[in-house]
Image (tube, rainbow, N blue to C red; front, side):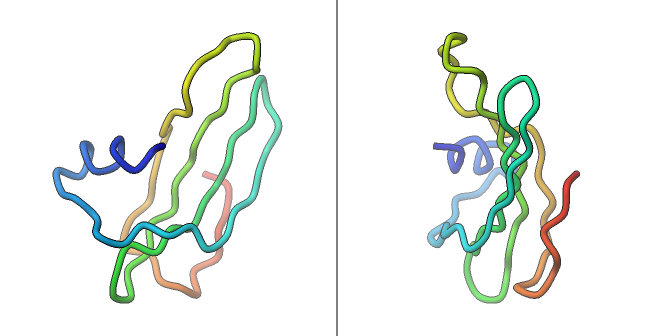
Amino acid sequence: KVKPQLEEKEGKTFDVFTAVEYKSQVVAGTNFFIKVHVGNEEFVHLRVFRSLPHENRPLSLHGYQKSKTKHDELTYF
């Protein structure tokens, strides 16, 4: 659900977009930190926010870090 948001921000499309790891953080909703394989040896770390159920909002891309590798640690940002 956040792939189109990242593609819009980056101005390109990703043929490969596979989540390989994630962590979560409960706030007034939930932050998900997701390591995504985007092809070749490239990875992107995403911060995705899911609001509380009663707010009825879609998943939102709140930040990302590019130029990551498979072995880069997924950390909170």
